[in-house]
Length: 407
Image (tube, rainbow, N blue to C red; front, side):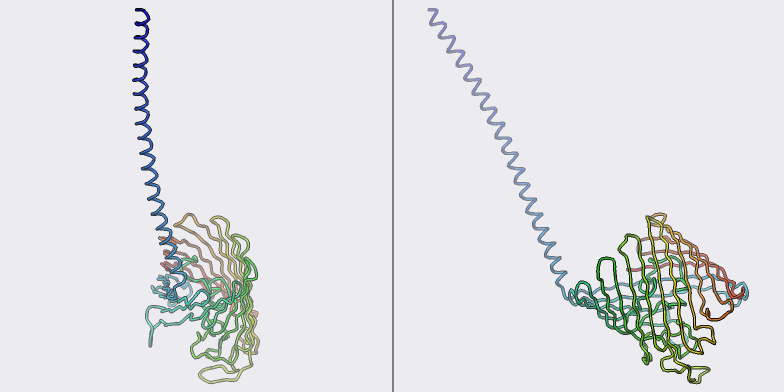
């Protein structure tokens, strides 16, 4: 009887244990199935996302390939600037300058024929109106073909900006301080200065660049002033008796530092030995001319300093009589960018178009002011200007306001 009871009890305990074990196994299996289902869902979502990413990558690659191989890469750009000048002549109020002028409206047109050959042009309207008795001019400043011979050699053929100075090749309003371009590069170089010919640019190593240009030259025969600015013919039925050569070496290997020096030689800036004096063609001596320039730009954090020096040596008795056989100038400009929107500057300018004589003919000009950038390519400018020279025969001061843009 006891054995039967013990056996019955043991069987009951075994049955209960089996039921419990079965219940636990069923619960664990359900939990496992749930986990597997969730992981399967996650894997399917990842596969979907990877497919979408692959499609986007392929679309981007197709777009890049299409752009890089396109033979219809045409670009349009430009810049413009509006100026208000309020300058008083303290010696003669009749010579006050109080005017507002849309000084320049410029359009760029470019065409990339392939990866090595491209076209670039610059078309400009100055002073808003052009024509008879109008102050403005319509000008073709650039129109050249650029061709890469290899990674180090690039050629330019056509009308291009002469590789001299700081501003002659880069003069869009957001790139410089002051409403007006600095007077040294305006009166001595003279910016903006373009000629027709050929240029070869060579980059022997990183940070070095060498330009050698053979092009049309200045022609002072029309005005006979021997001032470089008066000699620009702007490639408009320009006399071509004497061409010019320009060479430049640039160094930019050190971050924040830019150095450059250039030399130009022209055999005869009278273009044939005749000048127009009082409407009469008068024979003069041939006048060879040599221009030397050097500039430096150094930027550290938000502080930048620019400096430039330029000098002319012109032969010929007529130039010597006028004191214009030597002409030179320089400026130094420190500036500080307060933030992305505001920058302040000061600039000291000195130039002399009659440095060959013994008189006090130097002209000094001080500018200081502020640039306010609505956008990195849109700027509003204000500066104050003080100019004096020639034994106080020049005594001017006043302010300038302007806006400019590029795109």
